[in-house]
Image (tube, rainbow, N blue to C red; front, side, top):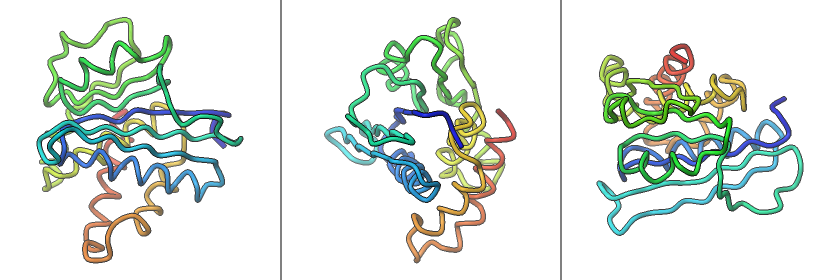
Length: 180
């Protein structure tokens, strides 16, 4: 079982699958027997605009789903790093997409998994797997949930019309997990 309480802010451009992995994480948490909350936030535009979500996982009822200083973040682009890196709690963990963010922008005093998520997604044959690669790295870095629980939850989160993509998404989670 994970620690008592875990939260994450996931942020990137619309179209990077931020909401999908937030939803996946919440579903997996519920299936694992945890209390969960999922709050999506969209910018003015959907695809290409900003998008972020907050997921809270806890063994106990969640008093408030709002998170000011997250224990962890998954940051997929530079504007999201600018916005959320300063809010990361002391001792928190951030997963940062090295494919789109220059390492010099990452605070050296933050615990960071600097992962080339776009490059790894392309190596897997699908550039849209960036989100799953990053989530896999987050799972390993935080130990919030077992990888297998999240992979299994894909079957209930991915639209039935895209069921053929479940194995490649599960593989992308594993690749990110192994990188971290």
